Length: 86
Image 1 (cartoon, one colour):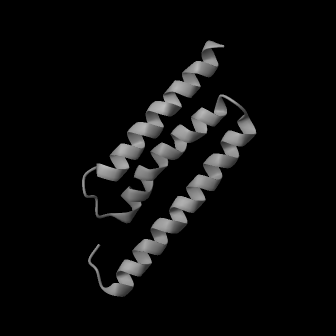
Image 2 (cartoon, helix red, strand yellow):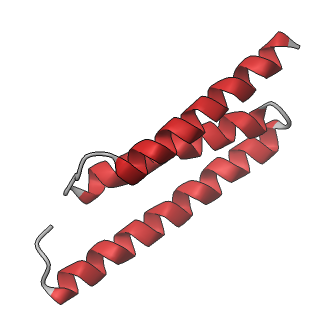
């Protein structure tokens, strides 16, 4: 029972802390570093769902990682088309 609580609370801390750090963190201009910064909340969400079911946690991690990567790469391409300096 204690094992489930550790996964849940660690996931909550990573999710909240990672989301705040990604939103108001330092202005990182490298898109790869931005992508890595968004992986922290994804891992937190996966740890929360890991306390319920392993399959749900794995599918959530894969889906969230793919969606975040697609969005950030599209933003980088759009900004380069507009001539912005990254």
